[in-house]
Image: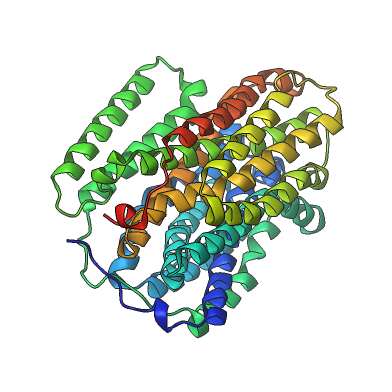
Length: 467
């Protein structure tokens, strides 16, 4: 039996619906910004706190790991206890953790605070999307709203390095965390005034065993990718990590198949459209985060650029994502996800291929062209992937459906950081460009993978999709 939501949507006028979208976009801007804003500041953080490369990787991935691990539970909690309530709780935790990050006296304290920040962020991503989905009852309007939502999220992800570079140049690396405070206060006030409460009428039980096993799977997998170059890929510790990952994955699947109300319903993945959209989200965010980290290390370490200059270099990526995301939303609403996905895959693949021969003297115009192409592809990708994933499920499952796709994004982010960091670990400035070449091949491969997602996408009637 499928739960239904309280009839909030029909009571909202057009202006109120789009105001709700604006408030949710404000929170999503924060989540996306904090996923990437730290990247450009890693060298400055390393100098300020005496941190090495792997400590810096954990500074980024502590946030994304916790975020990815808790997104689905946060979506379920929101469906159970109220989406606005969980949303506001997430804002408060995120704001408090941002202050702890700004005041961190050591890299260990910073990593811990980033993990707490991930807890708060996990209550924002899926819940914001669920609020938007429930506020927009018309499928076409919903597709356009998701396009706007994806545009803001894409802008925040791509603009993070630019914003971070400017803040670091003017105020130091701690300012990238202080800047969250006024945005959090504004979002809390606006959500109290304009965001309606909604929840599933039938409360779903919390799946504690499933949550614990999912956390182990994601944490150990990304952890071994980060620590593998240091401990050795065939060392006893690495072999133990592989065994734990495999056992936890098998246990997770077994537990979820036996529960009446699982954390992640395995039946969802029997739908090729949904499962391919989830894998597509992973691929897109692997490509984005490999690009951002390799860009930061290459431009600052190999080319000797300042954080501000390295951040400004990603402006073409931000522009491409911002311009193309709303266009993608309109295309999805008009003709479905296939064309935007084809464009996304083609542009991401082309951007990665531009840099497969990267060296110390690669023309800056080629770098900017590659970043523009990847940004355009990223902009086209988010709306069709998100709309495909949530469009085939009833609104009552919007929190969990949005959480699964958001989890896929954050898993992709964590994997991208871990893989990129592993490729260049130990490489000096002179060798870094050559060591990063497999990363650009991976970016191109992620773009090509979206063509497989296109093949799996099949238009569905509303009746079929709701079953």
